[in-house]
Image (cartoon, rainbow over all chains, first blue to last red; front, side, top):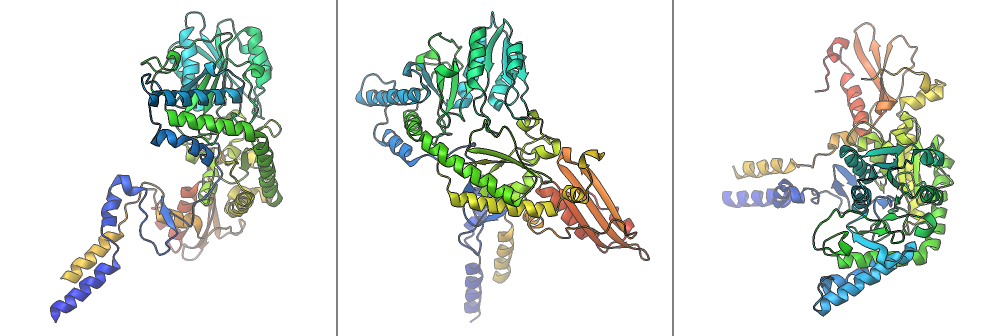
Length: 455
Length: 111
């Protein structure tokens, strides 16, 4: 009798607890992020301490983009059946792989108005930027010791320049105006006889402004200085033509144009030929510029993505512009104190960087957990400083902390935009209620006059 | 004895080792902040403190209503411009000071 009672009690308590393996799973770091503790609601998942009811709306297209299903279709055969190494010269697997790589090369070249012989595959735009900046300067290091770039470049360009500075080169970081556009006169004034490279990104990843590429190209041609541009955000979104822009080097990225991650390309002009010192040494693949097996499926994916982008650029651009207006008007209709960071005219439509006055960016992001967006605010960076791009724009410090970047892409729908507007307005209102700065402004106090005591 | 063992298991089960991100309590205080608002600044029973700077990304205004006769803090309100943890910690601070004496609350520390 007693044992029966004990057994039933044991059964009851054991059934109440979920499988004990979940405790062990939580201890393993590999499973820590994927394990959801048992919750009442089956659809809810808890990650990072937040309970999310469903996957968030994705509005962060500048960070990365989903792979287009058509691109995936093009890639799969090269994983499963045609898996040869493109550098194997002796059998069919190698030959067909090589053929696919060459097709992809011409697809990419087509999109930017170049010849396939001028495209080198890399592991991404970061590697291409490294090769461009460090490779060019190290090749011409006897005669050319100076680099001109802007303050709003991507971190990989700025870090490469810093590395060059440590090796004894000189770098000029050009300031930008309030609209994010580089001043052409300042650019002209900063070029010296020993300038080896001018590097200006075509479309900025944080604020989306489009630099005056043709004019910069003209200036570089005048002074006969190689012109490098980081076109990772520009490819497939705005018309890119290497001859019109007069670029000598262009960095391209696969995963920003609905292609796979882990692949990119570098355009290197042949007439006049630009030479670089290779940063990856090895078997001499990719004409000695970048050794290493070319990843056929990834490259095929990038090629397919470029071909699609060429066909659909016009349609995408129109649609995305409509969605951007819908987003901006929707937010402006319900909130005041909304500022667009960067030029409104010279801007890629799919990037909308907004600052909401009197509200802090990280708390806004935390509240917008059902929308995947990004912020340039301090709490999301390791230091207390806001994003360097916003600072370069001359944005006021209190506004620099409040920026949110909405990225709209090929697969964004109107419903997603409407819901994002709704959630943003709701969260901003709630935070403004809690904000002492908003209260002071409502009372008529001028915040700029206050002497803050830092601590 | 088996029941004791079984219930011990239950307790250990509850200890979830979350990755090092915001604690549930912080999220709770952020989503449902307690005591948001303001008192009348000119009320003699109300004390107001304003610290921080927008440049640092953190501004906090804390107001307490003190009972003159007993020196006890009867009510508190806060408003914060800052990230999730700033809002949560302000909210927690207002909870902690309520019902305490003014000297007592000086011992509340960050640690």
